Length: 116
Length: 111
Image 1 (cartoon, rainbow over the protein chains, first blue to last red):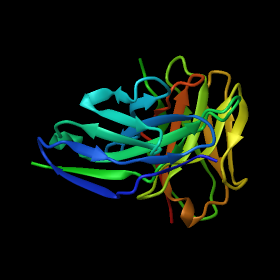
Image 2: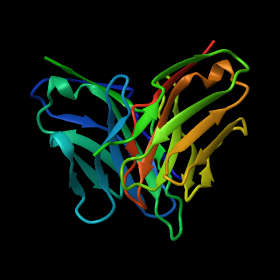
Image 3: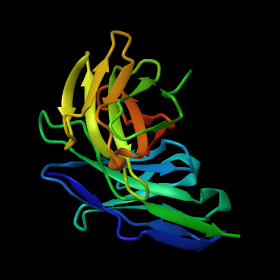
Image 4: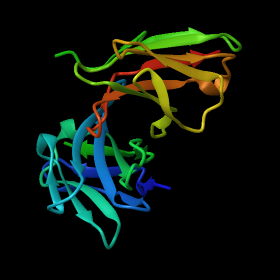
């Protein structure tokens, strides 16, 4: 079974400061990890993914995520937050066993609020 | 290049009624997945269609059914609506193992 946890319902950060949104996962095989962002009354928008390779993955809008296999984490980061980054962020994981499911499981989401 | 489009954007139904939601996938995508997102929750997987067949199903009752057409578009049908079915219904399309591309959803309110 695959699962993902986002331990923080809300993250508050001042504009210009670095931000981190946390995610931990559980899979039986190797993980295929994603971050999505959702603005009010909109669908989810893909930010970045990790399959294999470099543990630091760069994505859209200056976001990056760090994969840590020993801690089973995939935290989302940005060096300098913008007010326009305020949104709901979802981490998702998909197990990659041979012939496995292509269905990702999503976390409950973390609301990021960037204060001017 | 049009992304995933869903219709209608909003819908109000009464308990016991039936509803049909529609989705057109992103150009070039052949797989459609449906998710239910309740207020304050993450998306919950309903089912996925590929080659006009339901390939996988989440933990949803048989009241939830779907269809995929030869042009890859899809419908989600919900029968005997309950108050608890009120949610944002998201359609996502993909090609093989590519990341999901989501539409803006249909907001269903059951009264």
